[in-house]
Amino acid sequence: MKTRTTERPPILYGAALLAALSLIWSGYAITDLMHSGPFGLSVAIAGDIGWITVLWAEYRGVTLGGKPWTAVLAGWGIALGVAVLLVVHGLEDGGRAQAIAGPFVVLVGKIVWAFALEAMKDPAAPTPEQQAEVHTVMRDSAHQTALSHARADAEIARIRDEARVTIVRDEADFEIGLERLAKRAELARRTPLALTAGPAPEQPAEPFDVVAEQAINVIGEHEQGPSTPPSNSLGSPANSAATSANAVREQPSIADLVREQIATTTSNATAVRNVLAIRPDANKDSVAAAVRRERRKIEMNGGYG
Image (cartoon, rainbow, N blue to C red; front, side, top):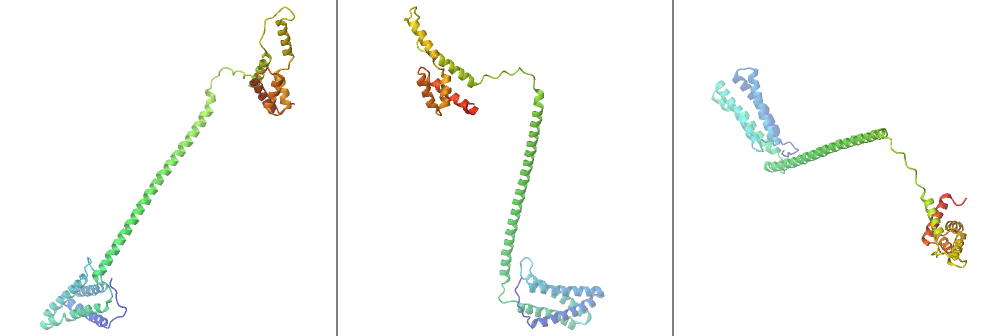
C-alpha cells in the first residue's frame, strides 16, 4: 500500500467534478445508443463504476500478480471503451462533430485523475518495487511463522498421543495387578481345603540349654586322672585310686561351681578362673561354655528367684 499525504490537493476537487460529469454524459449517451431504456443505463453506470473503482485501486496501490501497471492499464482500458461507445453514439446521433467531442469529457477526466493521483502520493513513500520487496519479506516471515506453529502443533499432538498410550498401559498394568491380587487371595482361601492329613508332628526336641548343661555335668564328673591297676593290699595302687575317686566324688560339680560363681561375680572370665582354681582338672572350654549358658539363663529368667 502506498503512503499518501494527509492534505488533499486542489486538483482532487476538479477530478471529482469531471468524474461526476463523465458519469452523467456517458450514462445518457450509452443509454440513447442502445435504445434499451433502463438496461442501457445499467451498462453505462457499470462502465463508470468500473472506471472509478480502478482509480481507487490505483490510488491504493492494488496490483495484480505484483505488477504495478495493472491498475493503470485497466483504468485506461475502461476509459477507452467508454470513449469508443461515445464516438459511435456521436456518429449515429449528431454526426462527426459530436463523435469527436463526445469522448472528450471521459478522456479529460481520466487525464486529470492521473495527475490527481500523483499529487496525492507521498514523495518519501517506497517505490512499487520496494513495496513489493517488503511484501515478499512479510510473506516469507508469515510463512515461516505458520510452519513453526504447524510443527509445534504436530509435536504437541504426538506428545499427547504418547501420553494417552502411556495412560492406557498404566491402566492395563493396574488392572492386571488387581487381578493377580484377587487370584492370590482366592488361592490362599482354597489352599487349606486341598491339604491332606499327614503324620503327627514330632515332639519338640529337648531344649539346647538343658542338653548342654547335662553334657557339662557329665564331662565334669568324668574328667579324672589316669587309672592304675588295682592292688589287694591297703598301700597298693588300687587303694590309692579308690581314695582319689572318693576325693573326686567329694568335690562339688562343675555345674554347682558355675552357679555359685555366676551368683557372686558379674564377669564371665572371672567366673571361669574361679571355677578352674577350684577344679584345675576341669576343661577350660567346657567351663566357659557352662558359664555363658548359666549367665544367659539368669538373664532370661530375670535373675535367681
